[in-house]
Structures are given as C-alpha cells and as structure tokens.
Image (tube, rainbow, N blue to C red; front, side, top):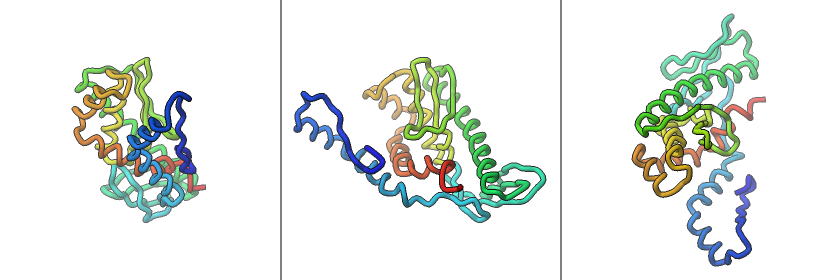
Length: 213
C-alpha cells in the first residue's frame, strides 16, 4: 500500500490470478483500514502550540497551557499540561513537549516491558525507543526490542499491546498461530488495540514531526 492509496501485489510469476484474488480477499479488512487511514492522512487535525489546545496523552485529552518563566519545563497538573518557557517560540515549545513525552514514554515502556517480560518468562537483551516511519516496533535476533515512543499518546491498553507483541517475538519469531495465541493470552482484546493503531497512525506519526513550522 503506497501513500497515494495504490495497492500493489508482488508475487512470483507462477502465482495465478485466482490465487492473487483469493489472497486480496483474505486481506480485505487490512486493505480497507489502510485506505481509510490514507484518506484521512491529509485531513488530520494536529494539536496546536497555543494555550487551550488539546493534546493527547495516554488516551486522554489534556489542555495545553503555556506560561512564560525563567525556568523551562513541562508539568502535568491533573488534565492540564503546563509548559513553562523563557520564550514562547514555537520551536521552543515543541522541543519541550517532545522531550517531556519521550521521557514519559521511556518510563512507561520500561515499566510495562519489565511486567510482561516477567509474565511471559522472557528476558529482552535491550529496550530502545525510536520514531518509526511506518512500523510501531520491532524485535531482532539478538533479543532486542524497540518501540515507537509516540505510542505514549495512545490508551494504555494499546501501549501494552505493542509491548506484548514485541516480547512474544522472543518466543515466536514470526506471526504464526502460536504467536497470536500467546499475544491473546496476555491481552484477549488485542484486536481492538490493533484497530486503534491503524485508525490513528497518521495522527500519531505526524504529531511531533510536522505542522508546527
């Protein structure tokens, strides 16, 4: 699936048209979800960098409040996200918010990785946070797991799903039935979390990267 909503199927020359059509039908739900996400890509309303703007954090809407101060920092006060800065330059505010969200993500992902690693009886060699363009996370052959830190804006169950997904790859390095059964054992409604990620992908991926310059 390309960004302009073109669906491309790459397969060996020996595969028949009937087999291709059958495969496409089996992936129809995924294709529909991607087409919907692409259709919304250019119409998503990114949060603004102004007092009163709504910012998403762990699935909840927070109200942004910008204050001028000699000391810069971000503090969460109930449902208000207070950004204190020497100046109100857009780049300054965005950098402060990005750093705060990244720190919160590191703490949350570290905590949930430890929790589910214990439940699954696995030991990841390393945990990393990244900003992926298309993926949400990964697990490699060295036992290292990585997550897109921007998922901290999602509801907690969605972040948990991402952690569970990558940790389950330490036991099943594929997407076999055994893999998904293991995922389901930790989060029975994991499909809802996958839907959330698909529906909000354009928003989450763009939140800290565009629309503010």
